[in-house]
Image 1: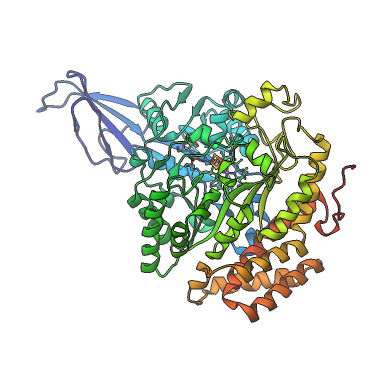
Image 2: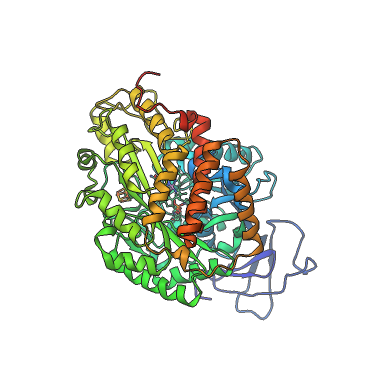
Length: 589
Ligand code: B12
Ligand code: SF4
């Protein structure tokens, strides 16, 4: 034990510190077996302090500090029903939630062993508000804010110390401040250990702010094993933070910066292996832009391709990238070899003027449709992020978007009206131009003012330039219904699966487990025994078509149909029957 540090030993439930009060700094360390409660020094009470003189030691007075391990409860609040939660299909595919909450195992890995930890993801298990703990710390995206505040209040009412961090706390601290004892702003890598150190010494501040961006070369492996991994549809790993681009509406670069920070390759591979060992067979790399540093992306993909060979391509991967991925054939080939089956790409708009306006310059270099088709030719399904309501969008944008989709072969999109998120250049511009709406909470886009049907389903917080708000929402709802109607979706999917290159889905030897056969059976029943004839017809006509023409692609067919079923149900409930959307966009409700 180095001079100046408190000796500590973790020998079961109790945590002992031995302080030499004569010598300062604290120097001594004396482990003893405390695994049973009859230890001579144990008083039976939590947090009791004993002093005693020990003979034969260099210190004349040794104070032994006996206390229980401090217990931390880390909680991810439930998400409201949203497109990206895929709640409607969980029972169909036998999962409890789509993606694992990466903040919790990351914070757990940053927590020294002297603390006892419990992780609760409310998306997959209920919270017992009477769980004994010394501090309860929550993470939250904006859409989880109301639930997060309820949870914090419930624990507060039970006299617990509460803490809140994560993207919402970081971007809207003034909204969060009244709801929590301790507020964390920024990445947890430095501030969480700083708090824990304070806390171990019996004091803490009411807020902690990260002063520097975290050094990811030092990032520990997230403690995935503390989550109930089989409950999730997909494992999550973050290999980098930051994005070199500068889209006007993006708050990710405001939080993570534009300089790419990279985790060491070995760490990423270890994380993949840990998840595989725990039965995960699908991993989503949660980087804001996986190819933000292309050289490194290639190195990683090469390593993943080698890994895939060794593990019989047990795992398929997906991630988020910028459209310039299509400018590099070597990169695309590596994605294919590494068994990437899906990419989420921020296309945003077919309207070139809107792309210029929002500084999405990487989408302006080549014709967008050609770029997308090129990615698909490498066997990769593209999902697109799309936005309506830019200053250069008129009411014609809705038809323009629909036409774009007809030729795109993109089955699924996260389409939403443009929102000026706090901290972004767009927010500052809207404020300067006096266009922010008084009725929207200007400092927070919470789940109260952000309907979560979609990204920002039918919500904006500023006045559009070339249409009314009513036109924006009417056009948006119409477009959602058109895009997700079964005939339009099936047409796009058919185009995709007929034209796409050899996919990772096809490289696997077909040897389904009993669980997979059971799931397959449930899916077949779901699309057969339905009153919705559009649904049944679309599914069976594509199934029959591809059984004959490309049977190896059926896994992709099933997966896209299942994802679509969730979105379809949400659009149906919230905006009306997709197939009954009028042919032309209406602007009068
Ligand atoms: C991957 C991702 C997704 C994935 C998977 C997310 C998941 N695992 O559940 C998918 C595609 C499903 C998704 C969906 C959505 N997402 Co998203 N997503 C991301 C992305 C790109 C990375 C998230 C991630 O895994 N980060 C890695 C972990 C380790 O980082 P972290 O959670 O931020 O935690 C760190 C710090 O915040 C901090 N921290 C976090 N919690 C706590 C708690 C304490 C106590 C402390 C001390 C510190 C701390 O320490 C951690 C380590 O540094 C982020 C953007 C980004 N770069 O952050 C957006 C982001 C988080 N998503 C966002 C949103 C809004 C959504 C959606 C609502 C809508 C949408 N934009 O599509 C949906 C809702 C999801 C749902 N379940 O219903 C917003 C949140 C905005 C905000 N200010 O709150 C972000 C910031 C992007 C954006 N601007 O759109 N998302
Ligand atoms: S490419 Fe994506 S992550 Fe990068 S700045 Fe633009 S919106 Fe943000």
